[in-house]
Every structure is written in C-alpha cells, then in structure tokens.
Image 1 (cartoon, rainbow, N blue to C red):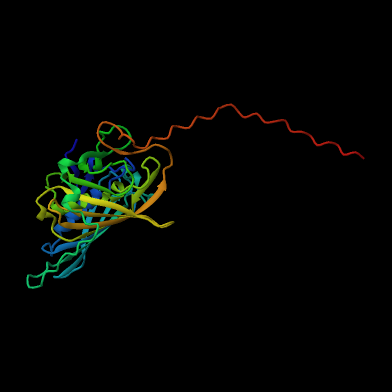
Image 2: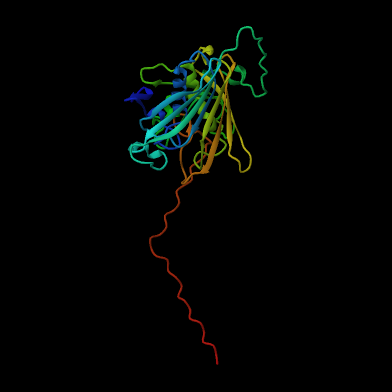
Length: 335
C-alpha cells in the first residue's frame, strides 16, 4: 500500500486508497483535494511571499479515484493583493471516473472541483497591532486537553474497520467526547502519510486536509440513515500554521440549521498553544440514504457502546402470485 495520499503520474495526480471518502468508495474525501490544491497555491509565482488569507473550494461533483489534472493561474495579479484560481479535472472516458456526472464525450476533460485563494501582503511593522477579540466559542487549551488524553476514533467504510480511507488511515483523529453522540464535537487531527509521494506536506496543506471534517465531527443526523455531503468549503486563515510547531490540529465543530434551508457547519481550529489560526465553514447537501445500513464512526474494536443499531433487513416478499377474490356478477334487475 502506498504511504502517500497522491502519486504523480504523467503530469497528473493519482489518488491512492488513503484519499477515499466515507460516502462512496469510488470518490475522494474533500480534504484530500483541498490539501493538494492548497499546496499548489503555495507554489504559484510570482507572489509566493504573500500570505494566503482565504481558501475556497467548490466540489462540483464527486471527485473520482482516477488520475486528476491540476491547473492553477493568477486571476488578479498584484504586489499587495492577489487572487488565484485552480481546477481539478478528470478524463471523461476514464472508466474510474464513474463517480462523476454524465459523460460529455470521449477524451474530454470534466472539471470536478474549482478553488480560489486570496493572498495578501503581511502587515507592515509600522502598523499598530490590534488586540484579538476572542469570541465566546473560543477553543482554549484547557477546554481541549492534549492528544494523549483523547480517544482514538476512525471513520470506516462498509466492511472491515481496517479498510484504508482518508479519515480512517490518512488522518489520525482523537476525540474528547463521545464520537457517536450527535451534535457539536471536539477532536484532535493530524495527517499521517505524506500528501504527495516524495514531498513533505506543508503546514498549510496539513491544515486544509483537516478542514473538511466539520460535517462529520458535528453530525446531527444518523450516519446509517442519511447522507450529508459538503458542497463547498471556505477557510479563513488568521495566523501562520507553522508557528505552532506541531502537526496536530484541534478543532471544535458545530452545525447551523433552519427549516427547509441547506444546512451549514463551522469549525474553529487552533494549535497546541491555543492560538486560533483557522475558521472554516461549508454548505451541506442532506438527503436520506437509498437503503438502510451504512457507514458509522467508531473506536477500534467494533461499534461504540450505545451507538445506533442498523435497521434489520426487510423480509423478502413471497414469489407466489397473490390470489384475487372472484368477481361477482351484478344482479339482474327485475322488469
């Protein structure tokens, strides 16, 4: 098994099983392409010395486990502010691209993800510093504890809990609360393998890899009955991820909902020292599963005690034709 999430292959990036998502075994987790694109944004010249202040990702359709073409460009050049754009595309005639939408013609490239970034010049030293007004929901070291104090938990696909996936094998997750309990969650995360074979992941790429877990960490609906897939992802950066000196990211995730409106989830992330360096949000597409059963998150060794019990299979209908009652003829009317 590869020890990276992506492998370079002929000018494209081939996802490994470490990139697999929880909803469809043929599609990627959103954190994998987000990290890949983020690392590409950091290399765009000129202007690599500018700070990335915002990242945005639009998941246009499920991203398949197929060779992906990544292209980047500068939309708005400048010495103080820049806007970047990127696209991930896949060959439509690739048999592995079946997780996408309808075919658009053999040999055509189908865009599966669009992304943008805003880079801003660092604040000059002569500009006075502004006190960081912390909100009430701030994640503090005291409220999170240490990774060693948390419980290892992994998201699993249907089948063995040892199946590789982005959440199960690429991302190490340690929970400070009951992982099967619906509602807001607090979790430590870090990327285990390298992002691209032969390259060390940057701190910002590690951060982007953990940003797409808000909908799962703060799940308010049962995994075995509903799908709630992120349609987009927005990340606002507030300080350097490298300043923490640790690969661990701790996050507090929660969801926001209103009747009949698309749900949204938010994540506040900090480093081990407690300084907040990211706030991310995403819009969800919720729907009921087509069949009962499904994927669930649980600690190693089996389903968590007290967790949801899969619905038993429905009894098969009899193959014998149903007998109909004989049709009565109407009475003759007397003359």
